Image (cartoon, rainbow, N blue to C red; front, side, top):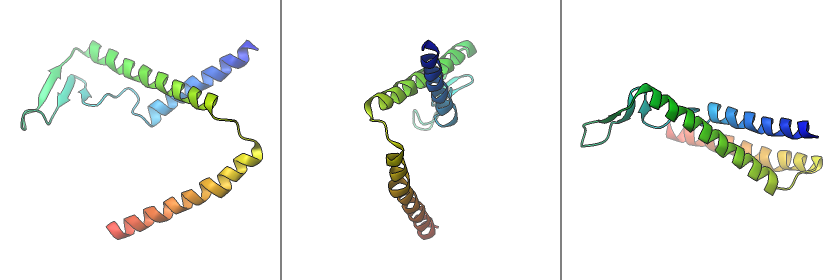
Length: 118
C-alpha cells in the first residue's frame, strides 16, 4: 500500500521536474548570467551589472529549479484534488467534441493571422 503512494508522488515530482526543464527554463533566472546579474536597460543606456561569486550563482540556480519544481508539484496536486475524475466516455466526449474542434479553430486562426500579417 505504501509503495503505491511512493510511485504516485515520485511520478508527480518527475513530471514537475520535466515540465520545469522543458517548458519553464529549468534553472535559469532572468538576467542572471555566469558572473552575476546583468541589467542592460538601467541608467539611460549604461548597463548595470551586479557581480556575484560563481558558487552563489550556482546556489541561486539550484534554488530556482527547486522552487519551480515545488510550485508545479503543488499545482498538479491541487488540480488532481479539486477536479472530479472523468469516466472514459466523458473523456472521449471532451477530446473529440470539445478539444479537437478548438484545436482546428486555433490552427485556422493562426494560419489566417500569419497569412494576413506576412
